[in-house]
Image 1 (tube, rainbow, N blue to C red):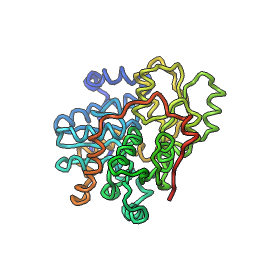
Image 2: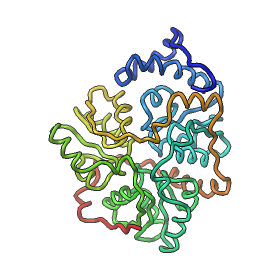
Image 3: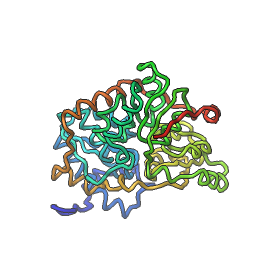
Image 4: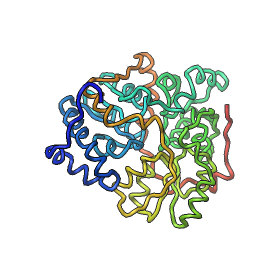
Length: 360
């Protein structure tokens, strides 16, 4: 820590954090907890003093997700909570594009991100100029943009989506514009997996998530050989052949609902590692198997720099007001849609017969 000393694990801290420890004790060791608990207690006290909230993504580590997160979930859920929050300060326990989205939706609030280096391979894969060029090449088609993008890219788009509602948004955009094709950026695999579930043609970009693109169909087959009864849940940013091997594919929120509702005996979450740790806190009867991949950007967010952000008021995220106004229209269109239904599974049989994607 810089600027002030580390607090001790006192009896008072132990009492303040007892309920959290009871919840995370199966995923955090006692030695780790003695280091985490004083910071958790400090953070939660300072939040109350500053009228601040912490938005914690599903990929945060358990001590952040369960210890200091006021609103937790996937990108869509956090965007909705940011829009509804009456806090004066929002701390984004996630990556930079999420903090920008919070600022877009809450221009009068102070939005902080604990580490400016917390980026995203998808967000860095495309620019506003790229979007304008795609519009020139395909005039009249709506642009559906994944929330994993910069504010400048969102400002060039018509409507945003997340992995939870991508199919819903693509079909809504096609209806509103009266077309049978849409531009969907920037995740190539999400676009291909959406195309497997709709008759709408998709023009896609070559962006990929550096975490999810590493998974292979062979990984899934090896898991099934080692654990025949395990259920495999994959994120739609994974390659299509990975989803074809899975039992279920959906957003992190959909994965969470699947596990808590169906209570599988053994499960594998094909996504970022901390997702399994966080779901496991509530899914006490389910065994979570690996593999998983770490997101180096998400892991830049720690209890230490969350505390520093609150105490030292850093790092503030700003968005040019003109960019923000245009981007807000696209984000708000997404938020105004009804919440997506959680599917029983992707329609993979249909997927084998209908894939209409043009890749740029």
